[in-house]
Amino acid sequence: MASRSTIHDVAREAGVSTATVDRVLNARERVREETARKVYDAARVVGYHAAALIGQRVQADLMRLRLGLVLHKERQSFYQQFKAEAERAIAQATGVRATLHVAFAASQSPKDFTALMEGMVGRVDAIAATAVTHPEVTEAVMRLNTKGIPCFALLNDFAQGVRQNYLGMNNLKVGRIAAHMIATAARQPGKIAVFVGGYRWHGHELRETGVRSYFREHAPQFQVLDTLINLETRQLTYEATLDLLNRHPDLRGIYCAGGGMEGAIAAVREARAPGDVALIVNELTPESRAALVSRHVTMAIGTPLHRLCNDLVTLATQALVEGIRPVQGQHFLPPDLYLPESV
Figure 1 (tube, rainbow, N blue to C red):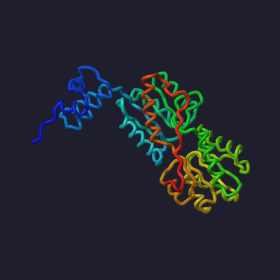
Figure 2: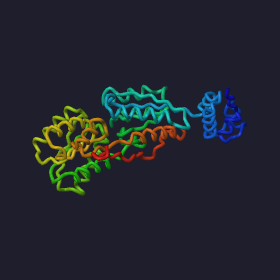
Figure 3: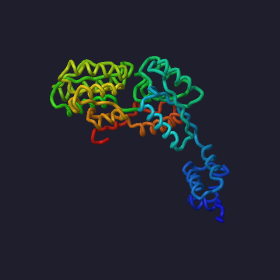
């Protein structure tokens, strides 16, 4: 019969003294988190009978972070990926006892977002949301800040006055990247169309600005048409794209700055051969991946959700330690770029 592991086995595996293991196990004195975790890991490796208790002691000494996350479009693949990455980041967080509370807004209405965000008071220590840019959201964020709850804007700014805690891509640069790819992929000069979800999305406006600034500066032979609002809906985007293709035989490129790309993909696939129109979309989903493979989509610009969620947990933890505004300015992340040959 194998002998039972002892405190000496744990100490030897961890590379510390038995006295240190005793301190971790019995909480006689505080030890560094790194040391406590080393002891806990060693206890698990050698099968020490009190490994679970050591883990509880380690956790008890850590600061608590209850993170609230408010997203929208619960049925969309991208936001399900977002939720899964946030859950992973919370589960893998070190130096903090982290838990996650996720809610999905029923619509893009500011009231839906603010109700969910303020409804988390008392249950979370920090809140992050993909809310629209609207004064009601701004006021809600300010009220939450006065209660000591830091708020983080994800992907899209809440408003100009509360932009310090933004996490996401540099949307102006994203628009210029889309324009560069269209200008590079287009076989001859012509017209360019841009879809935005609506003017409650500051990020979409910045992407539109990026597109226009690039073409003015580097490709004036193209004409950017008046921007179209698609309310991020598939059917509206589908119908508008078909109309564009019928009215403008010289349409060379389309950029969907927000949602609704499924409609544009369906219309381009129906009306044009692969590569005839340079279609740029955001996020890699089953629909955009299939369109990249068939070459009806020229490029997908993806949010690096893995890194974003890791950084969110880190910054939210810092906010609890350092105060309400841990992000100086905006926390930009480089986009993931997907081409037909990279999927």
